[in-house]
Image 1 (spheres, protein in one colour):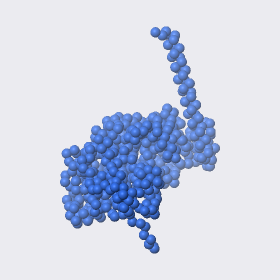
Image 2 (tube, protein in one colour; image 1 turned 30 degrees about the vertical axis):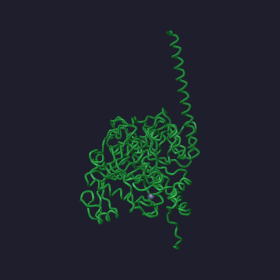
Image 3 (cartoon, protein in one colour; image 1 turned 180 degrees about the vertical axis):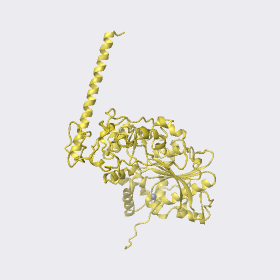
Image 4 (tube, protein in one colour; image 1 turned 30 degrees about the horizontal axis):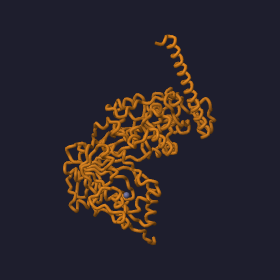
Length: 526
Ligand SMILES: [Zn+2]
């Protein structure tokens, strides 16, 4: 047994270690502040006159005029983190001593840039986030805003709006959007009820969207009201009619029969419930899906977005990231409650965006025909008393984007456009065949409460494998009918079938693929 004296010596040692750690942390924090101050000076950012946004080491050079009407800041923003948001937004208005309307445009000219924040930094106090907690209140709201009242309480990195977050930044920068604007959510509630399902409380089943994202402002209205933090929906649910010209033809040919409920009339007009979903990534879960560690994922996201999100590196305590990418839309035909009913059949198409074909009718691929086929089959399943669902992902050109896609088209058409060369053309340019990474796709199925798929309207082995890997069985796979395949797209579909896409028909040999050739460019004078 150690003597009291020895114990006391050990305690003293621990205490002094703690003190020196604390000192080091303070020094580190002030160094960071100093760097931030310097960045502001270099960037020529004008700072507020009241000195709150100044830092001691590098006082602002006060480049340019400073608004004499700047309000005194409330206490809430007098900490090192709160002071960084110069937009002056104050959701609850409690600490604002200036009427909101008196200087709506002062924000972007008085802010101090902060490059990043650190856990434990003065004023950093993220709202608790227990991803996968069964109870929504225990799980907590997703808060990503950098507005005055939210910045200290943020528990997510990134921004709302997915790829549109950049337009928000433009709107603010060009003084067309007042950052003090508070959304009025009256009557915006979901048009259909969904869940909660068991999967919502499984941190491994849903990692790329917020299962409570359609209810945020309503579930957490007390936090929104009392703390003034910004809580925005990342999912919205609405109802609509839709008209697709091909379906009018389907009705004419007798394939689709109007029932007045789902298919409304002889023009093929459809009744649909739509769910729009923006991405919310739980980083440990996303990393696990890809079999990588969280640190590797964070570093790659940081480095390959031009260093856009330094907090991916400095804020290991924040586990959520709202990435600047496109989301998805669910088109549900029939009663939305039937999607999760294991006693009725479900027909499902998971479709990845292809603007050229989906919207503009390009004939080089099977995208629009397969989408139309998917909608028609989904409607029929719903009419039979089951459920029909089409999910549309914004992953243009295999998530390589349209520029890369057109480069590939050029390389194909200027060479000999053969099915045997199809994937090589993409790989030569992009370095990969495909960047859609279906591993995250099944999240939406878990969210919708889907536990099995009776008819999968897709031939993709990547989609199939990702879904089955997530424990959702696929009972039947339905290829696109041959007569819906445009002639020039045979190159693509045959190459895909050869590479593993599902077919009830024949899989070609390499030699046969060599003979599948697309149309060359016509030399037409315009
Ligand atoms: Zn396409």
